[in-house]
Length: 237
Image 1 (cartoon, rainbow, N blue to C red):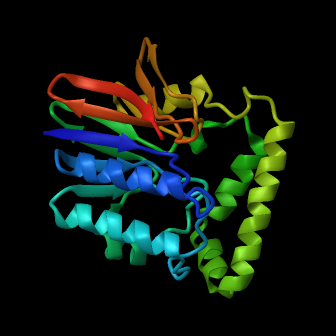
Image 2 (cartoon, rainbow, N blue to C red):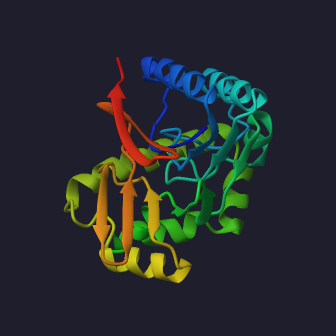
């Protein structure tokens, strides 16, 4: 029995080989893993569950097959797919998780997050995040015709890429103060998150922070069994 955690796969129609790799990964691990947690940014861009592209149809099929086989699937929203909703979850058998979720497995307790809310030095992004996660904002956004939403999302992606070029790397990472406050508020010793694309295991006096990697140059996942946590990478070829 095992548990698998992944994030920041950034699936896109521009990278069909990545979709194939993701399919093989899910098929391989769903045969052994009882739970698979996707901690945000499964897609590089998601503008609503009504956008029935070839990519979304294929991913739904992959995930539904895994859930039908008995693997429990969980999803937290990332900054790229915060509009993913109940329809997609129902179609795939996934359970949508809140932005902060306590997972208990094999005697371990961990706080799961996407990680973007911990990057508190990035003031501009935090303003956008607060706005974009507002239920009224989301409701209004999803009422916009699909074609217009696609244009809005493309502009968001361009703006995000441009903004990253102008920001220091430190600003786009989590702050230790935010990490400490969050872990202490939940009274836990282990935090698992993605978002920053900086896979590592950090040890603090107040606990451990495990950062999942993005699937750009390598694939990354966190494996948990009776022996504990193991952060692993693999080739995307």
